[in-house]
Image (cartoon, rainbow, N blue to C red; front, side, top):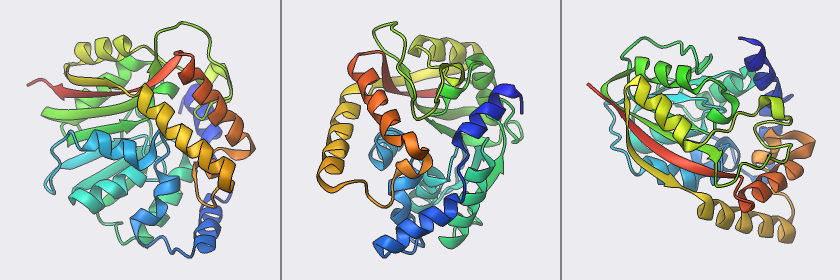
Amino acid sequence: MDHLETRVARHYTSEDLLGRIDAALAQLGLSGRNPDDLKPVDEFHTGGLEATDALLSQLEISPELKVIDIGAGLGGTARHIVHRYGAHVIGVDLTRAFVETGRALNERAGLESAITMIEGSALNLPVAAGTADLAVMFHVGMNIDDKDRLMREVARVLRPGGTFAVFDVMRDNTSEELVFPLPWASERENSFVAHPLAYRTAAETAGLELVTQRNRRDFTLHYFGRVLEAVKTNGLPPLGIHLLMGETAGEKLRNYVANVEAHRIAPCEMIFRKTP
């Protein structure tokens, strides 16, 4: 890994992550054998499972497809794809603690034969060319400076006609500086939030044609309005993405919502297709 990727992996590394997840599951009386048990913590992006389904529902996914989850984290989206659609998934992530925890959770759910978790970079995917029918990426590009190289790598691993589905935080209508810390970066030097145009331009150059794009700002504000109201009423739940963000989890989420409210950033969906 280069220096930036080392910093990013360090940002997401968490001590005894599996142990803390297990403690939270026990508190809730859950085993984790059902992938749905893990949804509060293993869909580490805006909107959680709601947002995952909102993007995946626009795709045609069948058991025959080979899927690559770029920046797979704990493997939550990979498990969801396998559990719901039956496809085989390769999950790639920079953070060793995420990959190791994801493997343990896959085994517990009996999905280890359907999901391959690999420690690796989105800029140098450890996957052969033309391997994937579908690539998905949820909230990863904010940590990647070189969007051109990212799109070239995605195009390399996709077969002709393959699909790339993205859900990233992108710049919105103002160029004001972001307020940190944020869930993906405690400091400005690790954050590379780009305008949607940068994604589209890099994708087009790499041979990926835009199929659809959707701004998810309103969804984000409604979602976090519900979440923050529930926390105010009931306190933090035992199991949630706060387990992945350390002691500053609350500040990171409040700053994130404030940046969205100020139109500095907004989550955005994009779906691309690799041209023949």
